[in-house]
Image (cartoon, rainbow, N blue to C red):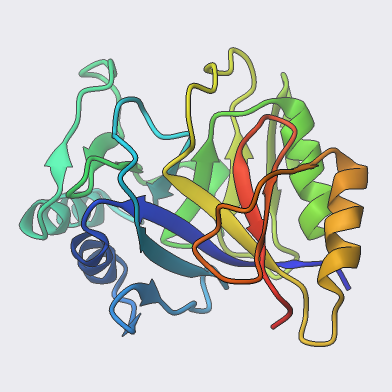
Length: 236
């Protein structure tokens, strides 16, 4: 059995505030103040750790939140503003039907209009939408054993066989990597798995092991083929 996606981890100056925002947005339970437990939609946790990384560019990955109706889209925007979110201008045109927003530390997310076919039959977090190459989409498909559900014009997307949120990569042009990402994936082998064997498998797929910088003891720090940070945790 391969590693599973244990969590998506946010580095934040005030992790408690960001955690509270996303707990309110997603109506998910906070555990220990810094972790949102998984639900049936996504299957992975959201974790929030202290980091002094500056917010000096758009994040490599952001959430696309789905809407069944225009009223629901408007309600999601209103809830985000009430919880401390903000409207963002990243160069989108006024005619764009989705709404670009940021959480209290400016981490971008989009509230998508109803009728978006790509996000049909997903979850409230319809996608973790990422800047990245076709190669990195292929890597993550093999790393997680999630099938490709989109592969066209160098854009790729994967989704768990159980459904839920997609992870997508927009293809070229890919922004240059100028420093560590504020969001990264934590992977974990199953309870009876072998962490080192999984690290070796991921290296064989194109990942690189780097000096350990993880927030969690025993984790192995790695880079995917695009240079994005991720960690392999101890079995669980």
